[in-house]
Image (tube, rainbow, N blue to C red; front, side):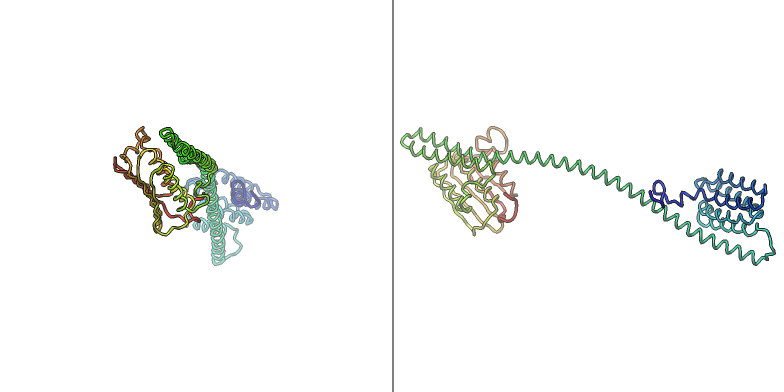
Length: 408
């Protein structure tokens, strides 16, 4: 609150307005009585003060406001007739008229007040023309003052409404800010939970694609060595290599690094290395064909396709009993496709859709992991198979360049 405003940002002139009628009564009365003590003026002044205190309420009904103004005009007539100093009281009454009466009715009240001020003054030889001129001047001055007073009051009311609206808006914004803070806190919590879940899923996929596959290869080589002791030395060498590679892959997975074959090779060469290594370890002929113009791909794209190839080959080892595997890597306009086809046992793909034991028996979890990896890149994953007809797996993902897409 400053000097120009009162409580709740109410202008000072509005706070002073209810006091003005008393001031415009007491000032002329004081000077009139000091100049010439007259009990009648004292009584009329006290009557006017009591009348004002009893009825001056802008919020009362229009009829009571008219009664109040009529009584004040009557008292004013007697006071002005007794002493012209009370013409000052008429100025205060002009302001009350614009406070109490609406629209054109206020100007009628101004005209009535001006008429009282002109006609009630003691006559000093003024003719009718002088009286009319005085009346018109009084009405003009009062009307102009009333217009200014009304404009100021309207602006003040508009300002008060704007302040109230601003306060409501500020309150609503504060409430929204509080809600937003709560929502943000919930979102952060959800994001942390999602991050934990995502990391768990990543670790599950990495363990499945590295350690589990390596252990599967070790088990396979061990069983083969037991069945054919003559090849045990070569099998043990292969088992040692698989163990070392699995350990290295486990360490890379923990640190979220690129798969081992991609560390020092481009994608096509790394895929060739994986296919050749799998064929040599399992003794199953496998070929890789690259079509289209090879382009550099984002690390996530290369890692995803390489993991899909590793998982698909591991599934062939565990379930297919295949004698031939064909791998095709196709670079198209805006996608890159990886296709693997074997001539093994095959299966019914519907058996892998559920979560029951049947799914695991045909590599269901491996298919789920591959599908999840491809879905993360908004790609498509298709499995076609039938009993004794072999299996075809196709993974197609956007050909995201190294500078675009998700980071490593």
